[in-house]
Length: 453
Ligand SMILES: Cc1ncc(COP(=O)(O)O)c(C=O)c1O
Image 1 (cartoon, helix red, strand yellow):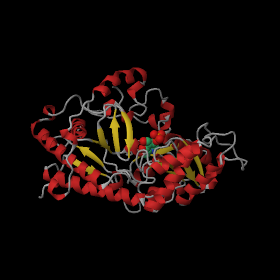
Image 2 (image 1 turned 60 degrees about the horizontal axis):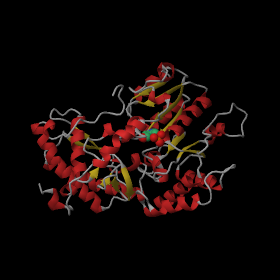
Image 3 (image 1 turned 30 degrees about the horizontal axis):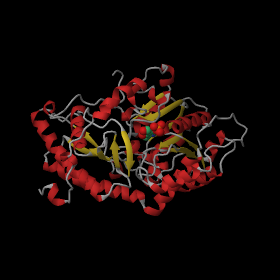
Image 4 (image 1 turned 90 degrees about the horizontal axis):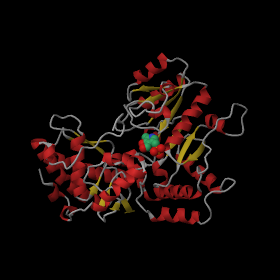
């Protein structure tokens, strides 16, 4: 098979430029002294990266970032998949800045709240109303509360194969990291398996008339079996439950209208966030008027306290979102994400074959949301091998918790990444044959969701 370097123009990786992480290492203890976990998202924490890694970023432009020591990296999965256009993406920054100068928060609603509501509802099929917030957890939790109020039921069913829905008790109470959450709350959340209609039917059968809603991503790492999502919706309607699609990752990535549009299944409620503001703090709960209106002023049922927050409609974040939506429309952003992800997938697959890594290093997910799985010499999932791979990529100027691309990943960035992956794969292969201990500098990473440190 042709060598990857012969088949694409692969610029040299940054390995020739020795990285220095001294400023990062100096600041780390202070960060941990001042901030529990040293970061404001566990997924960004030190335990998620090799010891030989940049610990603090000071600047980003497009898909490139610079750390506190001045090292430059090509970044993937930027801002936990929120920054889909690129860091400091000028038209979005300009739109937010123009709005900042007009004021960001008033005593009455700002007109731009209605403008963005209209723009978003044009994109999301079958949704009649929207409420904005600042993060995904709040809108998912609002969807659960609304569904409970609408149905008068207390239990919720979540897809147990999908990793994350909210920082709130109804979800975190079901994870290993459930300290501080009363068991009685966790017991109200039940789990079903993805692509297994029978497991959802069992949940309904075991708790007749008690399930308020089904919360799931229409698709995460595995595509839905033909007809599965439609049947989930039918089952929900048959049993009187509300179907909620979490579009935090899929929204503006599978399709501008989300995975629901991609798969042609309209849920009763859905939630968007992350990409909708290219990293600005903005999220949305959207859905059917009949349900959403319980949070409003025009009904005579019990009032639902639906997402009333001080910062929920900060105008600059709404302006950023309006601009983001118009860029997606004008510049075919979603098509680009799929194309660049496919380019990367093709090149990395070639490297997997060349380095005989089938069964040890695997690419998973859609091109627009590509991630990787690492296995040891026995084919078992391995955090040590994940850490080694991250370490070797970082050494070559790429920082990848995933291979999730943005609109700013040019062909050159993709090809440069592929070159770095190829070289990291060579080390990976050697580590499979000789033991990772020989190559890994420091301790392996650990899963975020664990009971003890
Ligand atoms: C699928 C999904 N839902 C919800 C959330 C929560 O979003 P946030 O971190 O904005 O609260 C996340 C965050 O990563 C997510 O991936």
